[in-house]
Image (cartoon, rainbow, N blue to C red; front, side, top):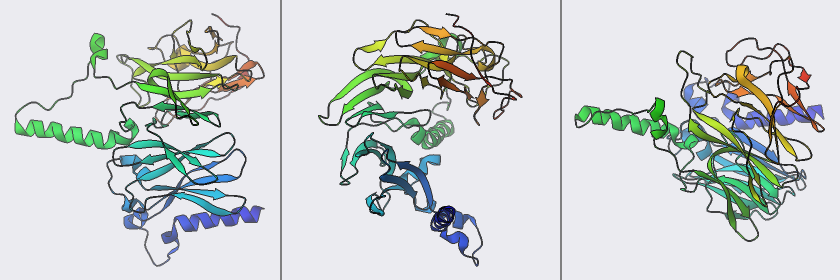
Length: 394
């Protein structure tokens, strides 16, 4: 078995980088730009299907306005059948006028979410794994840059964070958009017709900037095609409960004012992050308290009665100093667990974003605690015991 794994790994390396084995060719920038690559790999729940993203050489891109997301325009999706040991389906555009990505499989493996990127359009589709047929919807999903934006509720029902104006996700267009805006500002300045300037409101006026079109959380019935809007807002992450009855949503709210004298990290939030609970049968559940939630951390209790998160009451305080683990119950109560003689063991992403660690042991929350080694991105706690938190404080 070990030899088979090594053989597969060697095969993948040589197929992805054929030029790397050319002993007579120097490794130059041109060689690097001709390198193929792999993207995401997904396996269906029943283990029958394996979907792989294969990316064409970078120098074949039709344009580079997508910046670090150029690879999406070069991507094709190959679906491998483990029963027949063959590639059964391929989504590709040889001319790269469209790129394709693989999304999650349905619970029974009969369907898979796929994405298509064209020049100015990002579309969600449903691939039938047995036939390879793809049904393209009119939905423009949000990109999964900061959290989950697509989830299967059942084999026939999908939850999607969608962009109602059908604009490209900001992750795709931010590179080209910044260049275009900078160019226009320089042209304004050079012409002398007007001053090329960017206005960023602050203080009491910080919320007066132009706001993006609110995103929508949509429930899609694949049998009927019906779409139901469950919530609207600057949604960037969702977590479906184990019983599939409720969904927790993280969204951005009002702008935050940076604290004078404190260094600003790249990953520091510019807006308060709020949590919403939505019962898919009866609607939204009002929460007793409004907090500012840390990203990337939502954990449902196995019985679906509560969700564990990490939040701070004061948006001006650092999460390390002012944050606590909280339990939000499905009746809307928000209970702070307290520190119990321990400091929450947060880690920082490469961008400086705070990431909490924890989960559930049966019906009891278990949270990673310890002391941080410092305040820089990438630091790890010196100790992270799984400690029982203090009783709820309200």
